[in-house]
Length: 281
Image 1: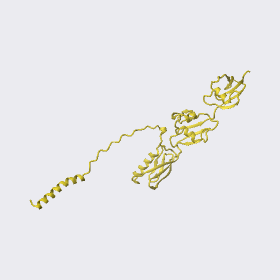
Image 2 (image 1 turned 30 degrees about the vertical axis):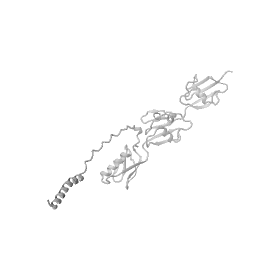
Image 3 (image 1 turned 90 degrees about the vertical axis):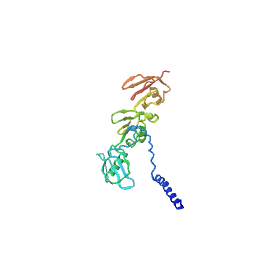
Image 4 (image 1 turned 120 degrees about the horizontal axis):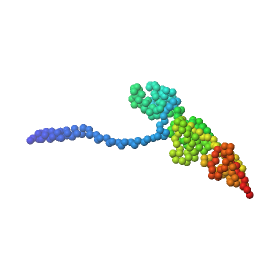
């Protein structure tokens, strides 16, 4: 074998070995099957505690398009439940959350061929359709917009709390006619079950405290607010207690025009007139 022949065979064998290696290097590796993500846990949130604001008539929204200034602006939800926007015209908005409305506008812009992948932003700037009415002996009675879940204590705080002379409970009447009378102290000191969420359309009334009257042999006779569960003993304490000549065994009560006898632990009612007599020496 000549030297020329030897080198020719060497070169040929080298190409024969490198060809499969190059081919395998150029062929993409088979992708590993994607890992299956664990299913997300589904949380059931009660409607009253839902954080998504549902739009309604006369609400005002600010519509924007990320990176664009030729679309959007402020729009009011009309009586037919729609808002009017450039390019797409009327878009149903009532009974939709802001995210649902954003998706609807995005699809309308894509369907109309205006933008390929628009990013639509929605901000509520005027709340008019969802509110509660607060009246009575509170700091600032009026309409309170419900732009998120609110507990009753939060609504009471927003109107400045109850004023002097108010009862120690609230009257809450819902749209369906049900009525509740939560105690104010329970709202402040109780757990979440005692401080319920309000619903749009609720009417919240802080009544004036009901009055009882006490005079006779007490240190501070007068008219006082009836507190829930107040007894005759507590009423006497409210009036400064017995005077030096007073007797807790000589107590007369007039209720609804009739004289009745009450023990010290019996309950006081609104309008009761309590007369504390003088003890015998």
